[in-house]
Image 1: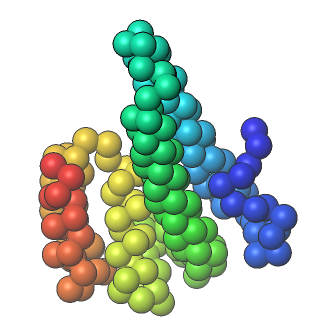
Image 2: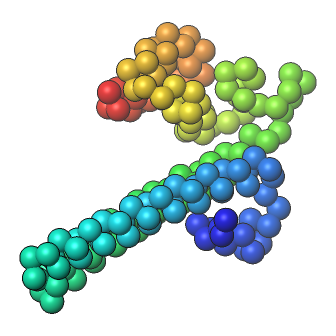
Length: 163
């Protein structure tokens, strides 16, 4: 698999851990899927315009540009998410006498509340697929109330918006 979501030759990405490399590969797969879907949509548009004898229309170029822009915006979101995950994984790669920091087994209280928000959000997004079940699981998590402080209601509202 070619990795082009980030430049692995860049100095800040040369010493990634195995977990961080797995995050990069996962993001690359998402990027590839987005680009493939955009290509399929473009080809379907071409076939549609061809069947209507409108291939030379300026509408096709405008629509192709729109598809391309939308795909690039989606890839940017995936890339930004990867950057946050890599930054967090670098922060969370240490631990204490109880082992490596991981929510909820061994939460890291040295993180800022905004970093804790990201940790808990990532945990619930990965742990529970169905949005309603995710919200219910989060609602009964007493550790999250204490760990997130005032960010608890923000994360609750975010998870509620997915329902």
